[in-house]
Amino acid sequence: MNYGGLLIFISILFLSCEKDQNSRTTPDAHLEYFGFSIVDTYWDDPTDSETKTNYADEIHHFCNIADILILEPDDDIVERTTVFTNLELKPILHLNELFFVLVDTLSASGSNFDLRTDFEERWNEFKLINQEILTPTSIAAFYIGEEPTWNGISFTELSAVSELLQSDFPDIPTMIIEAYPSLDDLRIPEAIDWVGFDQYFIKDPNTNDEFQENWQKLHRKLSDPSQRIMVILDSHYIDWAHGDYGNIEIEQMGEVARNYYDLAVQDKRVIGILGYFWPNEFDIPGSTGARGMPRNVISEYEIMGKSITKK
Image (cartoon, rainbow, N blue to C red; front, side, top):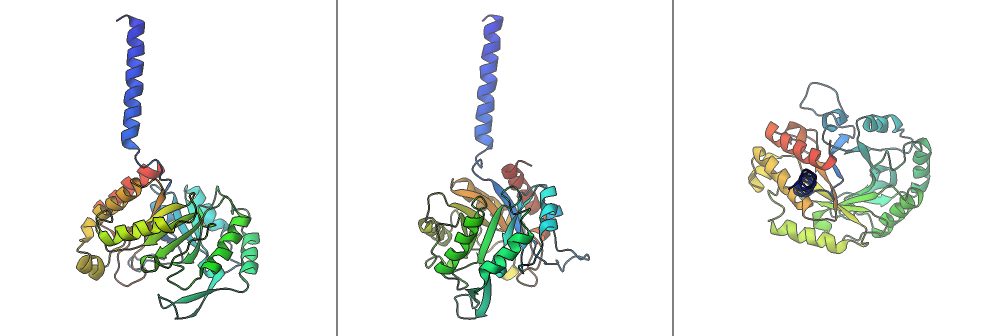
């Protein structure tokens, strides 16, 4: 083989190897987002000695999404969003309290929410105050309704809010996460872009029959071919729930995370993975959040997150 031919051969070999390596190392290429919830939602982890309600600085090196909670229409979140932006994080905005109000206990969850009569006025006030950051480059998604069907929010109410948001900001996705017991009754408006459900205390969602039934059910519920799925990662630990019921040791939560990652990798409709939750003792006293997991578990989160976010 002459020198020129040898160079061509080496170049082809190099490109082939590079292409083969990329095909092996990027099975999650369809996944765009990885992050955690309860990151900027006014929750101060009671297990540490400092007063802290924003944990973005703890996750930004391997995450690209996290949540910001909005409570009132006059909430100015420009500075909070800028903090995220400077850390290369995009917020998912919790808008449940902006649009819905707790009215009674007559829902599957025991907390029944109705659409506020002044929801458009509240939205317009919030939109005016925060207009400079309400862009697709700054915001990952609008999260509307907290487990909507489970908490009594009707399809009509959900449609009204999602259509309003889509009309004003068509390039910012809208998202709902449903509680798994209400999947049978869930109806997804076409104006919703990202959909998911939460079901916890399962070691492997890929082999758990109940989870797989719900996973397929969610797919059947999608109302538009362009809708994407957000996988809700079980990233907290409750002794009696995960341990006694799920037969999972806290040191095994890294394995649990990897199983959720495998679930997401295998489905091209999945757009990302969102862990519930980051700080400790949210929802129930004594619970451990991702922040308090053993080092081997946190390392697994970091590996997964960096693979998806390319950080």
